Image 1: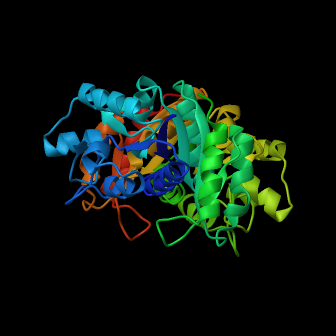
Image 2: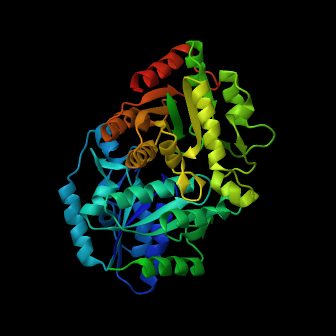
Image 3: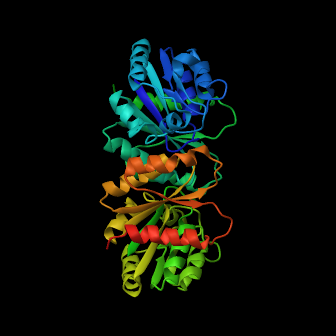
Amino acid sequence: MRLLITGTDTGVGKTFITYNLAKELKERGYKVGCLKPVETYVREVPEDGSLLSKATGQSVNEIVPVRFSLPLAPYAATLEEGRDFALEELGKHYEELSKKYKFLLVEGAGGIAVPIKKNYTYANLARDWKLKVLIVGRAGLGTINHTFLTWYYAKATGLEVIGIILNGFTGEDVSERTNPQIIEEMTGIKPYKVPRIQDVELPKDIRTGLADYVLSRFTP
Amino acid sequence: MRLLITGTDTGVGKTFITYNLAKELKERGYKVGCLKPVETYVREVPEDGSLLSKATGQSVNEIVPVRFSLPLAPYAATLEEGRDFALEELGKHYEELSKKYKFLLVEGAGGIAVPIKKNYTYANLARDWKLKVLIVGRAGLGTINHTFLTWYYAKATGLEVIGIILNGFTGEDVSERTNPQIIEEMTGIKPYKVPRIQDVELPKDIRTGLADYVLSRFTP
């Protein structure tokens, strides 16, 4: 299973969901690896990469091969920091991890149309690396528009969206009641709902449900 | 000029931009009308409609024919409030205003894929009402993804996007420096940049620039 985990926006919980999915798959005995090809806004150590390594036991270097310090899209970071990286190198690293792990969860940065290079987005990467797509969106107002647009662009670029995770249900936003149903009507995909919690680890039953949801929808 | 003013998200400044554009066009002597077909989250009076009426002198009833009280997408509001409205009636109202005004600015609710009815989005409305599209997006991190996805969906549904307004520049978010250039590279449209201000009225020079930008890019 080669999966791009993308968000409908920055800060919707991509790493949180990737961490919990990886942890659950590992506890089920699967060989699981994570790859965040490019992490930006890295001060000392890559925060996302460090969290993911706690779930899989990988080294942070293996998870995050390319890093930038500014909070930017990867392409913008190359412009601002005057450094670049080779997509071919990234591809080789991906191939190595693909052989090493049965499940490889590839986390994007921000949304699916975020540019990694000039006019080369995460959707292009997913197509070139033959990744299927899991969309993580917020639970509240505005998620219908972003989830649909993300799904629409992914499909239009030839990708298979295997599932939608709506993250952060609090019960305080009235749109939470109808968002899942409307997203299913618009995309044909029944979202999986994840509550907002303070901790990084989901309760076991929700984590189990998350992994079951993804596994049931992933056809090799 | 029949223009849909849509946002890349909820709360990016659609009404603020519509108000300033309408006010500038009116000051130039054009007959300008605004139409917000559906306003949700209406407590006493429609807030967006009331602001727009200050720019054009229209009655709020003319501007906002359909109202719901909950903060939801229109379709979700019909489900939650158990009330519905007829698109045909809305269409008739639009036709009347189209005849009455040389410039008709139609403001959406949230983003372009927000459903007005089941599987009927603002993009569908724009196509049926033969509206061209002006996208309003935020200035900072995350706007590349949302602006591109909004532009992509609009184009894919056969709409003409005449311009992109990036709203809320503060100079504090490093991505503000590269977002306009990258959005232009990805869409072919040079965005117009609007600074964040506390007031509802833009300084005259920026308002003039906004109207010049829109007029110069609008071909009947």
